[in-house]
Image (cartoon, rainbow, N blue to C red; front, side):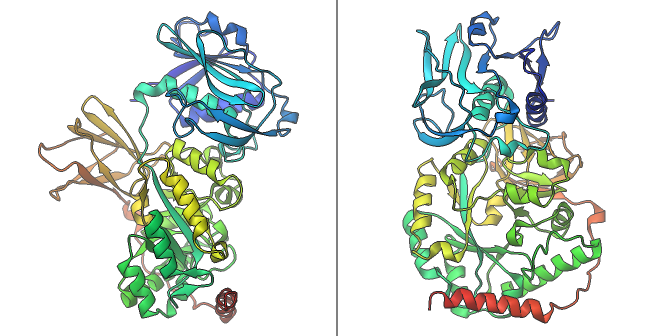
Length: 531
């Protein structure tokens, strides 16, 4: 059982928007906020909104913030450059960096005290400082307390455009829960280009041979979301390029017919099954013809996917889906699970793991930094038009990503199998699986392993754990599995689907002529752009 940490908050922090922040963070992390006096409860930290009160805490970590802005003025933000100190108390990957971001101007400048060090500075002066008294950390910030309205989600206050206020609060909570916090997966990344197929060695502005050369030079991987409807023809030499360069290129699945909102419409269960089965049959045909493997990861056309379809994806054997947070929210606005979108390394929605992705416009580098901070895969997506000037756009972002450390670039199958969080309790390793199948490398100290379900699911799955010697153990969440000495440190963890997830094949009407013509014309247009 994970320890629950108690954080005392100022009695003035009780507006609806402030309460919503506390409620959201309590859902995401093992914390409980206590308003005002804490009675007999032992508190682990305190948040105040008066910088003068920072010295009145009793040997526990503290954070002092400016009073919240009027919610009506919340969106009156200004763009500013922030410089983070190159200091171990600044969280990775912001340490030593300059970023441009939006903040709600507080009108307050911190005066750094003799026992404090500056963690972040804006053009007005220090905005985040820290002191250590008897080994206990105390933080002060010139930033306002972040606000989340009842209509907003976590991602609205923690995204590439605006994140600093929430970062200060999150990092304070991380300091408090550090002893029992879960570790995130290693840094990992991929680029995704939607729509290309294997009809020719190039698709529009995408030249597969040139892209392979760029990927080899700058060390990155490009995944192509291909449309199952396009599998009617495969160019042998193009298939050979993918087969012999799987380190740099791979394929995943992009809808079925690429019809408008085809994964978000209000289908019957039978129609959802039939659509996905047809997509898989078409991809099976491509694999047999081309002798290549296509990742069972779904990229819905235009990001449109309902949670009912996500549930069906999991039942059909897809390892995961890859959808931006904005698209997930836009097509599931009435779903309560949207409230916490954007926090975990991967979402688990209706049993389906969902990996985030970001476009190539806006505050892209900030989004990548936040993904690294949260343990999320750094997945950037584009279309062939984004490569009209060559592969340099990917080269630039690859250099930025690789500058963060040792980054694992891979296909989306391998990416999906690195969706987990873990922590060590003595010699017991607790693994929280965020995927249907994961590959996990046990720490040397581990003699037992416990599989835990994600926070966002209430289903109690059975898990199959396969060791290097191919021994298979079935365990339920919370059950201890004793590890044999001398075994390889890597284990394969598979989620066993309930019996109700199996079903007979469903027949689906052939794709209509209008959709076929639309796709052919779209491909012709894309190809003619470079002729």
